[in-house]
Amino acid sequence: MLARNKVNQMSLFGIPDPWIWMAYVGCFACVAFCAIWYWLKKDEVEEDE
Amino acid sequence: MSSVNLTVFSAMTVVFVAVTLLLGWYGYRNSKNSEDYLLGRNKSNSVIIALSYGATFLSASAVIGFGGQAAVHGGALMWLCFLNLAVGVIVAFLVFGGRTRRLGKRLKASTFADLLGKTYGSRGIRMYTALLIIVMMPIYCAAVLKGGVNSLAVITGLDYNMMLIALSVVVAVYVVYGGIIAVMYNDALQAVIMLVGMIVIFAVTMSAVGGDGFSQLTDMSLSQILGPGVQEGANGWTRFPDFGSPEWMTVVTTFLLGVGIGALTQPQLAVRFMSAKSDRMLNKSMLIGCVFILVIVGSAYTVGVLCNVYFMDHFDQTAIQYVTSGVDFIIPTYIIEVFSGMTFGDLFVSLFLLSLLCASISTISALMHTIGAAGGYDAYSVWRSIKEGRDTDAPSVNLNRAVTMVMMVLVVVYCYLMPSDIIAKATSVFMGVTAAALLPTYFHALYSKRPDRRAAVLSIAAGTLVYMFWALFVCSGTSVFLPVCEMLTGKAVLFEGILASVDPMIVSLPASILVMAAALVIGRSRCGEDAEPASA
Image (cartoon, rainbow over all chains, first blue to last red; front, side, top):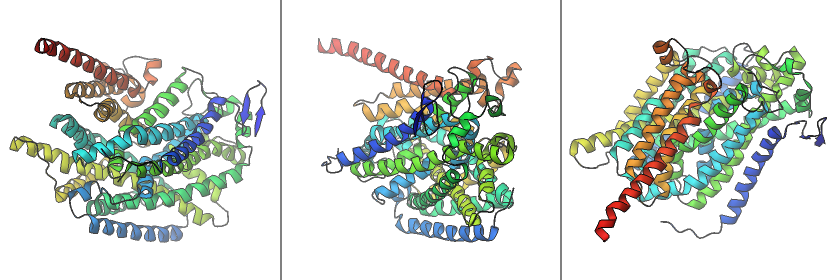
């Protein structure tokens, strides 16, 4: 999955440019953030303004 | 192009339309008053809100328009997926969602224009927001409708006019009668169909190109990659374009920032926040919406990039070289090709077509409902307020229905007037102009204890004027649609070079923010000066 190409850049799934594969990583990080946020907030008592 | 089994597609469509109309009837039965029709507060759960938000957020543009752009410009478009999630979902729900819901409930606001108007105590802001929706949204709606129908007509071989009218009638019937409840429940149904369709397409693509699809793209030489639509500075499908190059400017300012940030001020999405019962419900909706958008957008863009491997393997051409009819036809053509000869291929192609139909309908229905509310509720309420000399809300479900019907006809007329290959650009223009005009005002409304009406008006004016000037006179991508600059100066744009590639929102949104900030500072300092003698 992870490999290093000729110019010593780390590649992910054959994508050599971190500017591209970081976008994929960022997408999954967003979903993880939402899951953690929901988990932390699900039992919080809500005060309606 | 057509190799679609029309019997299978027709059968699936008939069942789909029947369920759609049934949900329209459900909405009609549950819309007892104007608030139910406009907002449907407390009438849905977090799953419905999430799927409705996601399906409204993503039109056929996300799948075929931007999927096709990914086939041309490469994996850099995945940053748009990231921005859709980070800005369009997380920032939208956490920064805007909860406060919009609470403020809307406190002010008894039923629409986005109503919310801004009541927060600032300004009929002008409410009317302007409503007019922006009435003028600009039908263009966006027509682009979505035209894009969806065009693809379906080309793929199926069915008559374009017949499909356009049939689709418009179905949407008009359930939006006009069922209101927001019918819209949201239908969105949820359509979202599920889109999910299934995109998962199948993604799985088949991975199977068709193999696990090393990106490696194959990386190994191709740059001369193979460069083709129509690719500008100077492109480095292939798996590498980001050179910083500051024309390709970089187009990808970053038009596709990434133009659409990503613009999603925050979509009136049709703000209404989804206001219909939620609690913040906890919004948190759950945020998670479901995030997964939904990741699956749909992530799959569409990845398939868009990887379909180049398929076209190179089978036809020794890139996607844009093979599909000469335009960027919007890359994904549909690919689907037809990849499923031909496959077991249950007919079924999967029909499922894709139905997903496309759902993606178009879900966005169009939400837009039509918003346009109807802007005309039949906001503009009418402001007119009645001026006439009676006092602030009043004039909710009339029948007037909303009438406006929606009239605007639906206008949207169909636009479809015949607008050029082809416009989906992604029209999406970008609509989102850009609403963000430039309304984002600082919306944010200030939610976060200020004393919303400053004058600052909001100046910010809206600055954002709109700068956007219009840049779109008509500087940006080559937008000036072609309304060639005012060419008529006045004889040149397509005022300045040649890199400025012509910069999207109008990149300039107009900072201008709108700066004007808002300056007006607030000046306003506060004047208040301070006025207050000093009184307190002395």
